[in-house]
Length: 147
Image (cartoon, rainbow, N blue to C red; front, side, top):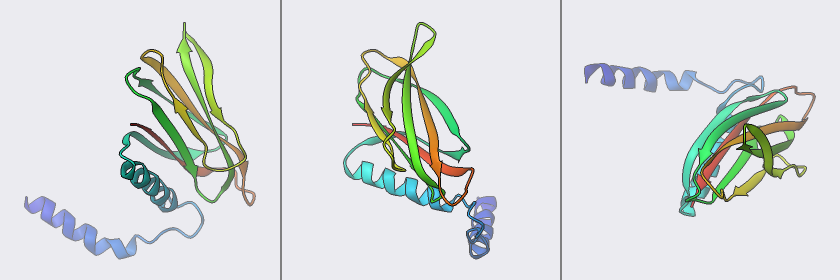
């Protein structure tokens, strides 16, 4: 208990010194955007089942089993270094990845809805299609949820 109190005191004392980096590489903006997405989804009584925050230089992928008991949504958001972010969803079929959904519209907040016919492994690919202001990498958040 004393350790937790000491840690809490140290963190609270250090918070003013933890200012956001000013070189454009801070995680703070994408964490704040992801938090807004999660808050919006939860207000609509959605259950967030995964939040992933990472850096993308080209594309990133992650996988997750999706149950046929739910209809899922996935939304990705990027920081200000991305003008166009795309989201592709693949299903594993006989050891091969088959694309089942995509949002490749020209914006930085792609979203898709997936209704699995059977519980299966799905791969989500986040691709930074167009960077802003000469950037070559950026932070993104991927949020997967269901009703």
